[in-house]
Length: 149
Image 1 (cartoon, helix red, strand yellow):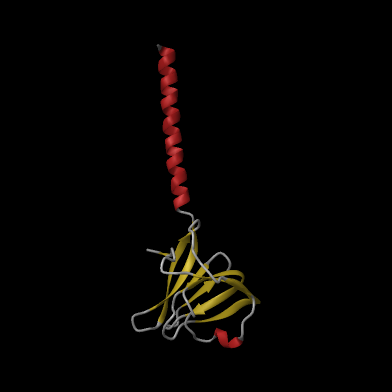
Image 2 (cartoon, rainbow, N blue to C red):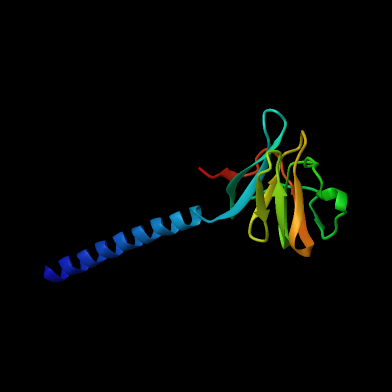
């Protein structure tokens, strides 16, 4: 009887431990997000930005993605995004500026979601090095962006 109780108790303890670990693993998967900044249009057609993230395992549907490591100086001036798209920086560190003068930094590890497709737009400048290597990924309405609270 004692042996049965001991085995039963050990079994229940093991099940509880496994359940706690499984729940902990679920939470870990849920919090793996990639830092992101979203350029948006304000009600008065100015450009602003929101800090947030995108889920690391989110599936995106996209056509016409392309890579670039070139730019012309005029592209640094104020302009809206040509379409809603993620811009993933692989090399380079840039400072982006929006209508009210606020700025933010984009570098590898932080994704840009350019969604300010109307109005005056944003500007940018390279602040470290001379090269900006990136991939543009056009996205639809479901961009998976999660704004910080």
